[in-house]
Amino acid sequence: MFGTAASTVVLPVLVYDVTGSAALTGLVFATRLVPYLLLGWIAGPVADRFSRRRLIIGGNLAEGLLVATIPVAAWLDVLTVGQVFAVALLSATAFVFSDAAVFGAVPALVHEERLASANGVLATLASAADIAGPVLAGVLIATIGPANALSIDAMTFLFAAAVQSTIRSNLRRGESSEAPRSIRRHLAAGLGFIRRQRTVFVLIVAGFANSLAIGCILGLLVPWSIEVLGYDRDDARLGLLYAAVGVGSLIAAVVFPRIFTADRVRLITPASLLWSAAASATLLVTTATLATASIAAFAFGIMLTITIGITYRQLVTPDELTSTVNTVGRTIAAGGQPLGAAIGAVIVASTSVSTAYVAATIVLGLTGVAAYIALRSPSPSRADE
Image (cartoon, rainbow, N blue to C red):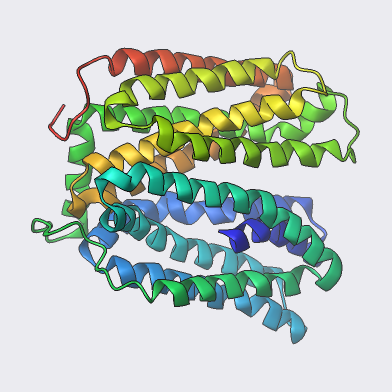
């Protein structure tokens, strides 16, 4: 996670250095999203049917070796933008399958009573990586250059694979029932489970709406800071706004294990969405002095919503469907962010950033109210709802 967070900054800089094109620099981000949108539907069934341990270790090895080809090519003076995009696409593809396996592996390792705490720890580490990784990236770019900086990312993947190889568990929760014979039937079983489990279905829909707001608000953070807050284009406070996203997420990760239980999902999910709506509303009236706190509050709410959805799905889903159900949820959410960013861009083109932020606030508020109504039934359980 630390290496990937650094590469999130390094890759666009590298593309811009090679091409000088702002359009291609932006496109490299979209390239990393494509595999999840296309392959997430089959990665979950694959992780449920085959060895999760091998998928996790193999995914890290593949990502590490792929990323390592960039500094090697740079040293040989044969690096092209085509190679950078190919590495971004293939490494993101490897991540889809290893990530699907992790969804099923975590509950198998820690068991139900410690799942919320485990996910809180993972979210804390991810948030810390999101804060520290870009800082390291800036230092590395300035000292050894963007291509060489990716050698650090490659080493983090290889180190992760080496450490994960010491895990001897089969990453399964007891004896799983016999899985369907084909990937298609396994996916159908996962979708059927989501359809029957109303709470899981509501959380996935809420997660999609949450992602729409993330894409809209964070995608327009730079023009919002300039047009609404009055920042200059090179204002150092802009970096603080992005750091605030990581800080808010970090606080949410620490708080999450203390508030989560399956019985509380019907209350804390609407509460987290309404918190995010309130925080996004403050962005419309905040001052430059309070802007960082407002963004951190928004990130706190959206991270809570994400972690609640993941943990509840892991708790109630049978082991043989855990990766499938969670990867479907992640895939739907992954589609929400670029769509939200696109909708925000369309709104800005015809009106203003503030109008786009109003739209995101309305989406979050309505989703919070709808989730409360949909989840008012008795406490969630493993039974069909």
